[in-house]
Amino acid sequence: MDIDKAIQTMIENLYKNTGKTLEQWIAIVNKENFTKHGEIIKFLKEKHGLTHGFANLVGHRAKATDAASAANPDDLVVSQYKGKENLKPIYDKLIAAVNAFGKDIELAPKNAYVSLRRKKQFATIGPATKTRIEIGLILKGETASGKLEAEKPNAMCTHKIKITDSKEVDKEVIGWLKKAYENAG
Image (tube, rainbow, N blue to C red):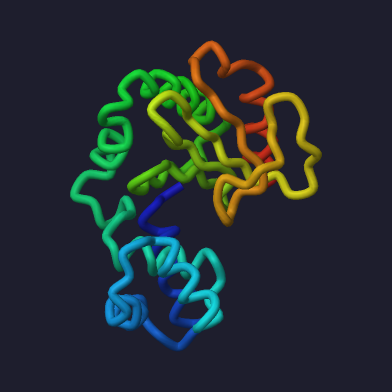
């Protein structure tokens, strides 16, 4: 999947749906002097009625915390694991497993996690602490079992899996990721 094309389509849809350009939304956000991404999301959803996806796009662009704003998107991943290098092999193993699902996967690094997309986002992977990675999954209607927890790691995901060792990246974890991937197609 072409990340630039997907983002451009979203930017075009933002204008079609709201009558304002991305630049106009960024100017609105910047007038508020928010320091946190979550504050921007809440403001745009509650005060302006934007969907979470559009609010997230505007928030990341306003703070330049998305892959498109970074000179090198890989630098965002390097930054995520600075001081948490012990977790990078887990991330690498998860990404290798996900990339085996198909050629239509887009990795969109942010400051704190990497968004995994197909036609839409299906998962996030990021270091939650210095000793744990969290996988956020979009599995609407799925009952939590095994390693899959019903706790939401963020507003878009419905479930999460906590991983502290690369040995925990097993058939169950990959199966949940694959199910989320298939649901996003």
